Image 1: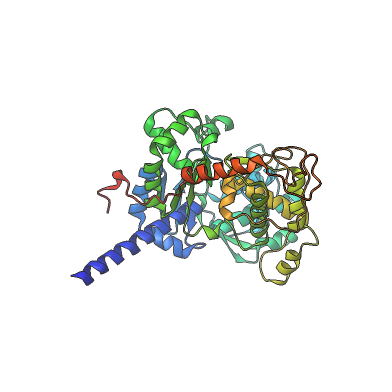
Image 2 (image 1 turned 90 degrees about the horizontal axis):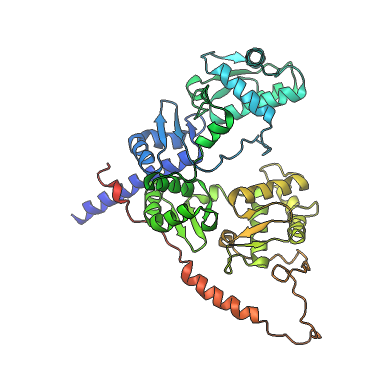
Length: 449
């Protein structure tokens, strides 16, 4: 009997793990195609009913699963991540225009066709819509057009049957053959605009951060927790801050059961920690490694979360650290160049990508002259890099190299009363910032198979 109970428990654990892995895959890739993610799509197909019901119940998201792809339709607060090219460069408005035009053409079942034939159809669609766009007009137009096609290929919405899209980008006469997958193409746009909507009202309706009513408010709060790297209490409205205080444990349990994540509930906010978080940040590429080194260095110098939720980052300190980690003479550049992997961006590009990554994760905030390091950065460690010179700052609270006390000859340390305050703050923080793993069940989940 004991052996049989152990087997049942193991089967249940494996089943739960598969469902949660499938849910995490859908959160990371809302359009999940069998051609691009065969293993993850197989899990989603196997647990489609459970996932459909649970996403609707916990987050109010609609999931549809077809023979060759799955589409999770998200709604709620938080801007989606900007679309980017394989190089990491964000889409230009022109590339977005061509993406919309290509989708408008390919939603009809065109069958396989040449990339130059598709370009002619895109030009006709642009003319009918009153848009000045022609993929054959020049190199800039062709690059934007090919970037849109490569993005769709990455989603699994089309495949290259003969030749490569990149060939046409380099040579206007190259005619790669592409095979659109119509059902996937029709799922790319999760919320097609309606004729009566203007752009502002359409975007506003999709991002209501603080709806009226307790149930809609709690649903919006769960979506915010699931979609945002770290939710800081100070960023919430008074009403949502009260909801977080009242419902954070129930929300943590529901999200933990759906996604298999740990939930860190701290005085400054709440964060979801995924078991496969290493697939996101920090990554093994140059951008991820520099971002991690920068975060650890700044945390070691500036001590975020003692007890404030963020601390100012002097521009001089940030520039000095980025020069060490991203500069032409950085030893890491030579190491990355020797290893097979992503292309190493030039110093200025690497710097921009690192800052964009940390801003997107919420670890760094603000712009030049007003940047702040959030307390969440400290969870990645605090290791000051001695290669970064100490920067003298005249501001009493943010300088990274304190001046000797007035009248001191530097031969004897003078007690700093702020040290006592730091120790008191650390004790209070240790009590308040208790790390919690929310593993209890959602009361509303009873009865699910």
